[in-house]
Image (tube, rainbow, N blue to C red; front, side, top):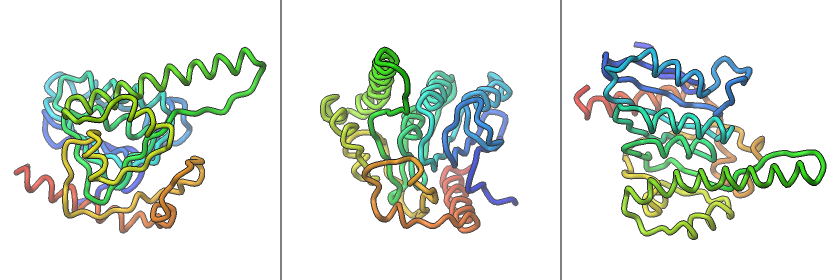
Length: 240
């Protein structure tokens, strides 16, 4: 049996009524040049082809982030689907990837994985009117992000307030698994898996990357084996 992918986008059809989505790279816009890019159009196509009989979806995430607009679209595709969506964070769900994760009816995080949340940013050029327009757009995007996070926090019944969450976004906050659970961003911490995020996070210009994350080495073969072991173990526990 072929190992699971360690990078890129892929799906597996386990049965007529169940699918698995693997989001193991940067979240991209629909015109993104990479053939393995994770895009709303690709996910929408795969969901449509699955048909109305689809009852359950597993989404496995190990991503450094990417386009916030693509992420909000992907979040909506999963959130509004009639199937039960279970998300599992393996390694890292940073920035835009954390927005996608909030689409789950059940959100799990492996005990050594991390979530990073921050305010949206963009690169802008033009006159004062152009810059004010872009700043206003970022404010609107941030309100959408806050609603996604607070929706999950409210579902969990956690005590984190919107003001506290906004402060965490402003500070660019990196959360370990237990911290993410305490804040209310995940429903469950899973045990027994160890996978590095395996991304060069310097390109994203994040401010507060933990030293351990910067030291991670991209060894795709090793990561593929680890992910393979974790997902097969999960399936065995579920009896599937």
